[in-house]
Image 1 (cartoon, one colour):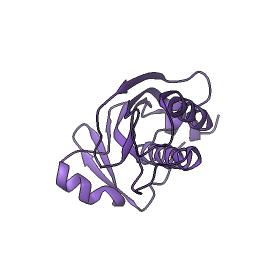
Image 2 (cartoon, one colour):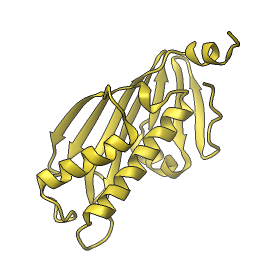
Image 3 (tube, rainbow, N blue to C red):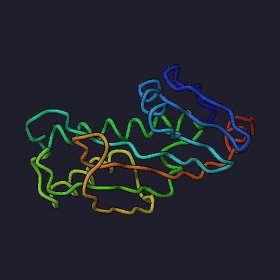
Length: 164
C-alpha cells in the first residue's frame, strides 16, 4: 500500500533511497549526526528508539508498558514514512539496562513487559530478535533501546494498488 507521510516527519531523498527524520528528533539528529530511519533499496534501517523514565521515582510496570507502546508507535511511524509496515520487520535489536533504579521491575519483569507489548505490535511469524544488556543508554533514564531492520520491496506498493 502507498502511504502518505505524516507531516511531522521530514523526508530527505538520497542517492541510495531516503532518510526520514521526525520533527521531535530534529535537534537530536543535529547534535548527534545520525538518521532515525534510512531506506536503502528494499531495506529500511531504523536507529534505536529509547524507552525512558525522566521522572525521579521508579517507573511502574504500567507506565513502562505505555512508554514501550510509544516506542513501537514511533517505529511504526518511521516505517510508514519509508513505505514499510511492521510486518516487514525482519529483525529487532533491543539493548536493556537491567536493574536500573529508574524502573520498578527486575530483569524477568522487564523482559516479560517488553514481550507483552511487543506482541501487541507483531504477530507470528515474529521478527528475529537480539536482546543485549548494556550499562547505560542516552538519554539519562534510558531503560531499553529498540532498533529495527525491515525488508520492504519497493515495487510491492504499486503492485498491491493496481487492479487485478
